Image (cartoon, rainbow, N blue to C red; front, side):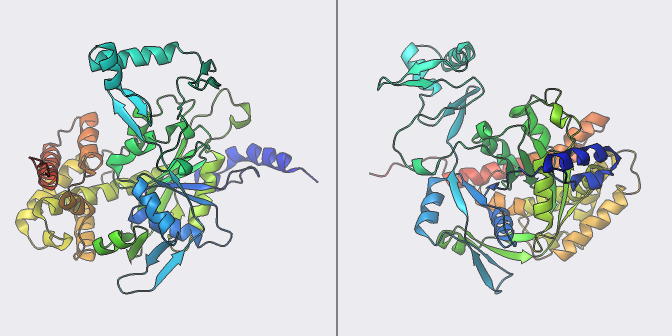
Length: 459
């Protein structure tokens, strides 16, 4: 009988003859790590965690919490995620999750400052130099420190100094210390807002390696490129990626968010389109020289597609890209216009003045995607927008909700992506650029109102 390793080697030999969609579901090595980490405990994150926990033989699931108050609420509560099936529907609570508190990491003058470490301004004050000069000093010191050199702590103990690309968190007691972890992450699902992706991943970057797969379930496009530029510039060490297009409607009522931060309402059932992005084989890894998808990527795809509630389906990278562009075109109209009008999606219907604006936006989008004249014609994109606006006429767009709450919007990864794409092909998307800047400006006004321009000291 062949060993498991021989079977795996045989599977690798046949992989080049498989179609792209079949390769995503090819068998994985038996030693694949099953634990799935979820970054982002918003409405989508709770739905995904809840759905995965409901599987037969569910994978171990860890929720990555970004605030200590969330950790407190979890430990004092029932330690369950509850999802209600539509307004007034049945509430189902599921437990069995583990939680971790992610490290506090800040950027100061281009330097990453970790929790409990002196920041750039402390160094600048001690050395009597400008903050930018202090940042340069810290960067030079990190590069000059060889990996593995022993350091002596205040207690006289020797401790290994990590290399320049690793993180080090000093010991000691503090809020949430027991919930921190430095264990590697193999399967990561990111459901944060697109604009918060890089700051969120920065806090766990030291736990991500080439064997990791990150699945992005977010609105917008250009996220992978931004993550690579900011966090994983080296193709040899960057993780694998899976991208998803989600059409589920999930929300958290404001009154419920205060009472139970791990509660969500599954208001509209939809689907998830998934696709693994091919990667270049690593020349230093002979065992994986034929792998264009990491084993963890195929594991995540198979796990998500067997969740009945999520209705997830795998697609080839090309088909997924086209579906992403279709959703981007719809979001580039509905989200910013409803945010500026402070109105529900249905307000865009039967209003010829708004239809003219809609057509100007979509004309630029259509021109920015050349060589696909039929699928991405302006007339077809307009038909998609009107259809979605009619089906969701009573809904409040996520961008309008963000503007009302004074949060940063995803406009840079929606209309901003269209502007950048237009520049690449020589199209000036001035209408999209103007709409984008207006939304950013309105969000800033709301933020100022929420924070109050002039803070008053309480005496």
